[in-house]
Image (cartoon, rainbow, N blue to C red):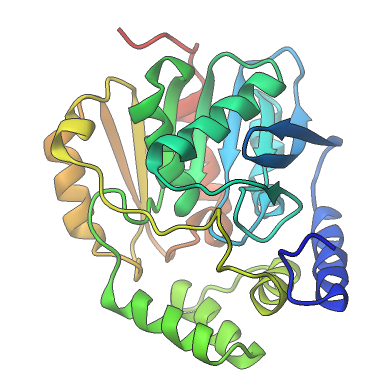
Length: 295
């Protein structure tokens, strides 16, 4: 019992759902726990051991298991490193407060150290995309290319609709509210994998989101964004609801030095899950380049 879950039975239910989703992982993998100054980080390691490393940072409370639709294509080309984020539902256990963007970058850097990776390409979805850009801001030497998918809070504030949904989930922590949230973030006619959706619902019901390592992202400054020399792929769902994706796109295009953009039809916020084939093609094309140190 870690104290991150509301009850022992709730923790067991979540871990069972996590294990069920992990059965969808399409290639061999290793589970590993590494110790950092900020807690124990649980990792899924897969792909080609001697290939360039790709660090994969998941969305809020989705855990590393959410990457299963993207693993086969990426695992043929990269060494995949997928941590469960500290402060989010998963198998990682935070022990210190993540009180600032600098600290958020520090625990990821320590995780890379623990698996002997000096520099990696980054792939993130939602909160994970914010964390990828944040690592580039605070430790640019550790970052190659960045694929930022639906980067919540990175360029513009979150929407009023998201804040309302979050307050509703806190006030009414019941399954129908969480299922309504999943439908809201997904594009019309799009559905998330039922197994992963069940894991997400179990996490929202039983995991204590109000823990020391959980925080809401805030937009980066103009100075921070113009200072990023890294090649960046910004992928946005055509039906994004968590933030104004048109404003985010406009700001990114005006500030980032080396930017490639894609707007994915038929996708909402969880575009790597909703349209994996389209997204995988874009990711492989963009990431399949040698890592170079930013000048």
